[in-house]
Length: 127
Image (cartoon, rainbow, N blue to C red; front, side, top):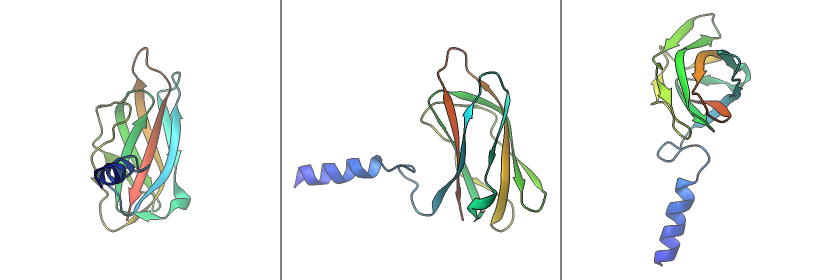
């Protein structure tokens, strides 16, 4: 019985979205961070309407100077993400203003930390 409980707990922690955040999260897009570029973008127009976003980093730490969400109606929302996100970590859940919004793209200005491996930035959204 104990082995079965441990197995279920481990399976829950290994879920591909996040441990602790489960229902309704969808991957809006991802982008490999180019060491030569300081600006990248994730296109997300075909993924539907969302009210909250989370940015996850895999592979290597990334310092975000700025993150701008370009919405379907042309509005641009600057997200409060001016910090280092380590590999395997993510931002807190960030609410978008108003009702659920269509995200066309997210533009981020960043610096990959020195001697870091390849990094990938993943954008998650939830209605």
